[in-house]
Length: 266
Ligand code: ACM
Image (cartoon, rainbow, N blue to C red; front, side, top):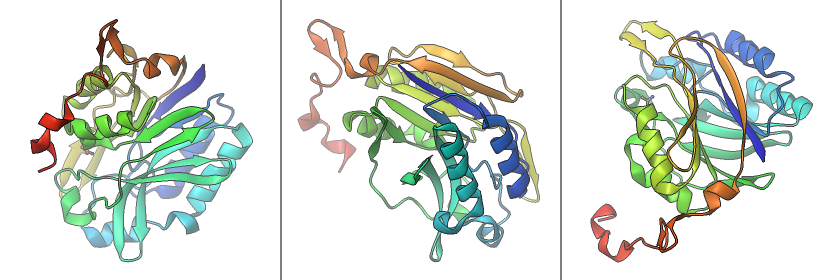
């Protein structure tokens, strides 16, 4: 069994240090293998423009916040999957990182930018990958990636037992869609969503909370409510995600017919 979970909370826009200290105090002492945080949990989400984002984004290798999170992982012996506004030279990505006691072990740069994100982020430029965390195979996707079943499928085909899904969901359907992503791929998924609103010059965005842990049969194992802060941790058995049989003669992966799926990649 692996202990996995998420922290749902309300980041304050632009308050990087105080958001970080909210996370560090909430997670200190938590017993888990991996805990997922929302998308962009330190900067907030609704940037006025690229200049505002550039002032808040950081190179993870030089970020005091990332160093504090590595230290938190070291003290508690867990890993974190977290959203992060990643500066890489003159590019800025909406990224997710897996951080452990030894530093950053995985970086994913959001492939499918949502709405105004296209005005200030660069689109992800790296292939989807999974990584081994203490024997649990983990993949990363971010928020609006839920609308592209190819993302979860690609991670599942690469052996993901658990998909970590840092989110700032504003539409009504993402949480429900993730139950289907789990069912069609036979994987676990944690959607760590934020609560509250970003009230900004470009308009107010309200986030839908309802973070969740979903299981390989599409079952909802736990869901938070829309507004309340919650640290949730539960045990999962990866063997359930490694058995792709639906019936003795039907298997989610062996029954695929990729020779007929050409339109997906054309
Ligand atoms: C989203 O992708 N943050 C909606």
